[in-house]
Picture 1 (cartoon, helix red, strand yellow):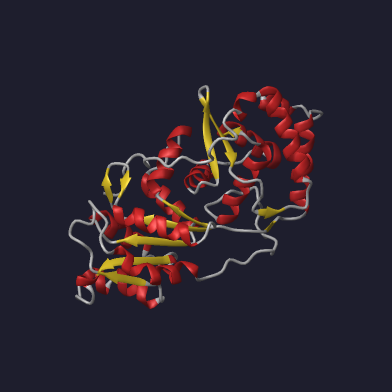
Picture 2: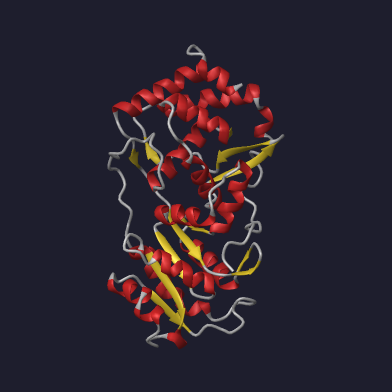
Length: 321
């Protein structure tokens, strides 16, 4: 139904969306606020359950500030399964790493060492924070003289502590690194207020696209993935918006949006009422028009709106092991 009404140039939602898109073509939006996103890699205790070390790090970092969000790739992968995402785990992790402010790798499993090798590339190593077992410090291994040496060259932090032998089953002394970890994630302030130079309609693995998709969900939601694509096509013309799936998954795992099943569809809505970007357009009118439309045509999408915005859950299929 939304597709049909968007095609009618005289419909209220079509008129408001065209006004919004026209202003975007004249003036690019500027970043007004930002979350700090940390991509946390390591082992799983069991399928879908991150290791106690990863869980402890997530709790600690997110308690530093309400603006800090820790992302598990497994959670994103699980969310994308709802909308038929066909990308493999390797490509998905690359997309997350491009968007994240920091990539934290706990070297606690063979897969984590593989991730270290992949993310130690020149384009990403400055984002890295590495946690390793102090018994291997300076041992002259390939890991020490290869990826870790590359990380040291760009002054990315490597945090050492004596890992417990049973650290995949229960929490060990991971708290020993928390002071240094806080200093590492608090660095590199994010600049806001400067207008973007990129075409906002060309989605990519970037914070700009991530926040734009968040704002669209806020303005036109609750909205399904298919409807969001129709909104993008109406606003920017026919082009590839495949990246929207990954961006929705990352936003969901970061708890910036939530998804609720309504019939056979999953509808997404934002967890806050504040956009991340500043727009030279009347976004309140856009949001009010789409909200009125959904209340008339899709009232069931608002049934859970005032319940808890996020429920902690198992993160789905295991990627790291």
